[in-house]
Amino acid sequence: MPEDIPAGTIAGRYRNRWDIEITFQKVEKYFNSEIETLAYPKAALFGFALSLVAYNVLSVVIAALESAHDTPLREDISGYYIAIEIAAVFLALVQLTEPNDWGFAGQSHEELVTH
Image (cartoon, rainbow, N blue to C red; front, side):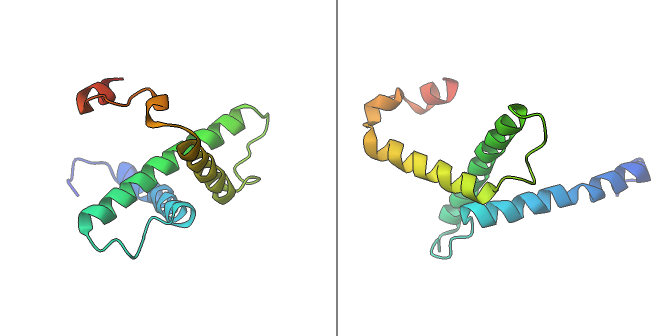
């Protein structure tokens, strides 16, 4: 480590590493991020990136639930079952809608990213 970084800063960052470790553990547990059949590195990386995006959605859902209640819910709710619910709703949306219903069919990559 560079000498100009205070020891307290290094210790604080090291202490917070468990937040990242726990997040990766939850991503694996809830979203099955390590799919063994993805033998191609790009496919495996894409699957892992999608798992991280899904975890962000899960975090938003949990934050929304917590903001609607007076007490923290993190210990009382199951992220696993929320992830299953999100997956079920997504599958229903895919089965019950057409691509044009989503509002971005036919857009270029640039148009999709800017909207």
